[in-house]
Length: 92
Image 1: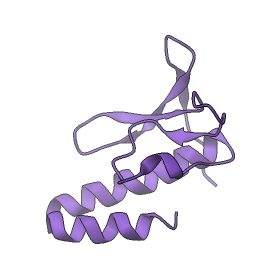
Image 2: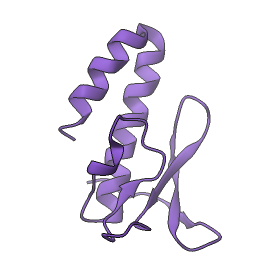
Image 3: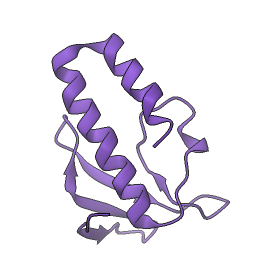
């Protein structure tokens, strides 16, 4: 697993992931500010994203890195293909 650079949110409920970039230019964000305390991608675009949780901050960041990469690639291939990629990402 790769190493990520994190910076805390002001309210201490999550972390910016500085070396992840979405097509919009936004950086990655992970948090465990949920009732079950599990790590999640804070702005996960997948349907029913709440069901996707990760054991560590690093694992959540790695999953978000893959989603951001797929989103960048989907910008070149279109919306229908993006839906297929997100369906495949459910296994991430």
